[in-house]
Length: 50
Picture 1 (cartoon, rainbow, N blue to C red):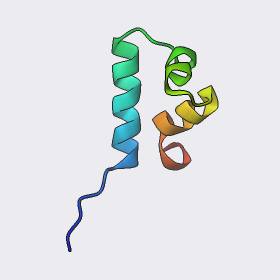
Picture 2 (cartoon, helix red, strand yellow):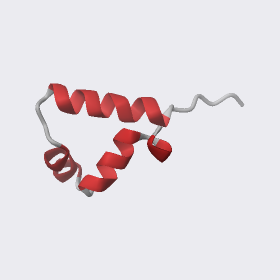
Picture 3 (tube, rainbow, N blue to C red):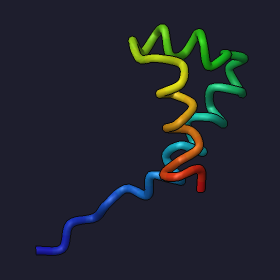
């Protein structure tokens, strides 16, 4: 079975890009997503800051 996997680095970059395009801070987006700002920051950076 060949399952396609998401690239976590690319996902983080897209989230950061869209957030910035919409003029949202990490603080605002993390509040909307109900996660901590540091968690959102880690998602945007990707695994181990790649």
